[in-house]
Length: 165
Image (cartoon, rainbow, N blue to C red; front, side, top):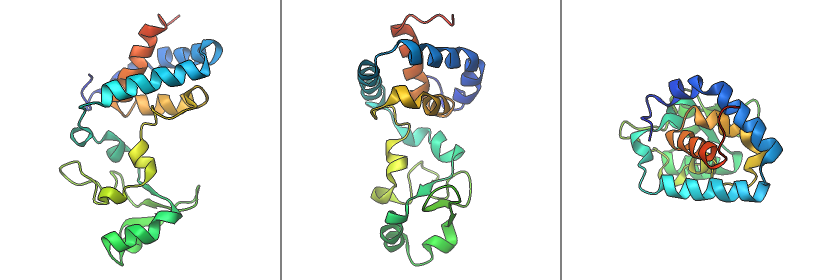
């Protein structure tokens, strides 16, 4: 698997090919079969993978905290949770961390929120979620950040015998 420090650079080199493969999938892939392929590869590649040794997602994105989680997270981290860590998210309901890397990222790769980590973080890079055919642009974003998403996309190209057409 590609090293976390190299994933963005390698994905940029393959950007045109990756976009062409996305277009190919949109026109040729069966939605349910593609979801099964993503899920199978997700399980296979994340099995034994230690995200704490990478955390590119935490380094390259601001954390997003939904409104419904604010009370719980505030109780977990203390009263100044919102003032210290968060700002209102102007595009969605809820909040986002003030900084990149995410303010909850600790030096060992763990999250300060522990089990209170938002679903958006728990589910990233979303490669095990249904509806991948309709969210392939999001997958392309993840390919530039997550070594596992990068590898899933590369393996899918092989499975579809895609040669950069």
